[in-house]
Image (cartoon, helix red, strand yellow):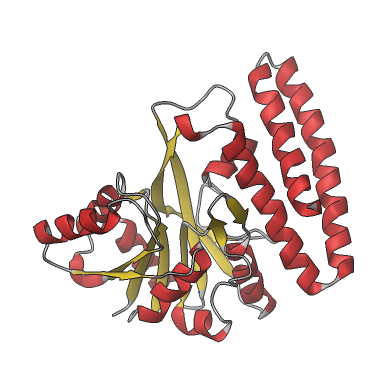
Length: 300
């Protein structure tokens, strides 16, 4: 088995079937991969939905397991431990893979024999429509990711997002997988940055991380959930994760990150003014609020 796709799920019964259907209909065929769905303490009927779906789709390898420790890092590590593939692919439970998703992953592996980790494009699927206050700089909080128009190596410390990333299993195991001190979402608390730390460990070993826009998923974004409280949890979670990550390195690294975040806050004010001058004032404050909330998480 060359590829294992791990989907961690928490209360996404409404969308998990779409994610599974997108894998079931892959152009590469069902023998090209296995899928492992990790239920991370869902309180809805996710298990029932999967059971019903599996009963109607009996071909291929689709395994359902549970992880009681709350947090995406715990769930992803559990899925990785159960995986039989040489490569691990992580996809969200509310994402829909394009029909040639697996085919393009396997092509990338074949075309880049030196690759140990790579990621692809993530296109937000706003339901019902993209809010007018959304901008490129804020859309990263809802998973928008489009690094480059063509396949290339990541540069300047950039890296794939966790919801569409692929890494060689033996290297993943060697570096200890995701750091559970950066678990992701636990209830209303978020401590993010687990993917960043994972790829920084890989970069520190001298490897190159690649990007391929043809490896693409569509990610559901329910506009009704994009409240100020939700955006705060995500943005502050980024800062909270950076605090945990940098303090584990040194106090100097943490101080450097604080200075960087203050600089970014200043830049966001300038950007907000620019949006106002461009007659799109609705986009101004969310950009600034993002940086305020991230700084609060970093200092909290």
